[in-house]
Length: 259
Ligand code: DGL
Image (cartoon, rainbow, N blue to C red; front, top):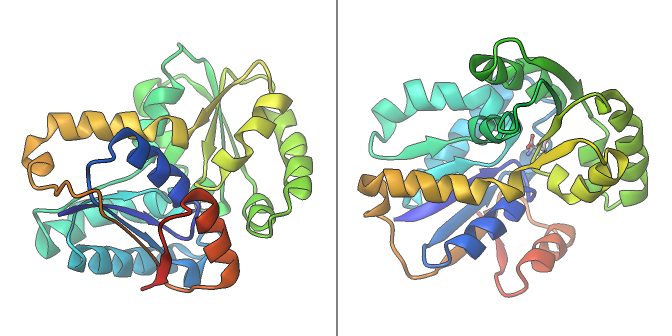
């Protein structure tokens, strides 16, 4: 049985790389729903349906634990998947998201004010606000949707991304921490750190592997089912030369194939 990582596209490969670096012995199955990317500007109903299809596909491919690396899918679909879908469809499978681990790290340093930058759908869900307030009820929270950032990264246009990072950063200068609440934003973390030198930038590629490792330690019933042949299988719902190039930059030896 494998560790599955799901994203709406290829952004989740950055977290997958962190997982593989920290826990190379396990087998990993990556699925990016690039045919429907971006999720961030879609309706909640469509995001839920796409994510459910992805879960069925990954479960059919022997995933025992699935990490939804996509913040948008986590925000809109995770609760339904955990509470309604998994108990009847595949009760032995565990599905986890990225929001709660990120929130836990964001409030670690006694933060009084936390910023969140994410896709429109994630911000609309207010999931970060709700989870942050569960831990620190009087926390100041500044949530901002940045619909331009994913397209700029997808087009490899980092000059435009940098302009938007500078513009958005102005809203977060008073924050103690800023959550980069999107799979693509770890690629911009240095730009945010440069624009906001006094703010702690919380980037999911730097925190998720420790969280997963800790989870597996606490859940031997899952960990014991995981195979350890260091196999990797990376699939996407739509394949083109651009996505193959992006994947090859991160994993030169692992082919990206169509699901
Ligand atoms: N994966 C999405 C997220 O983390 C970003 C890309 C998209 O909009 O689908 O929110």
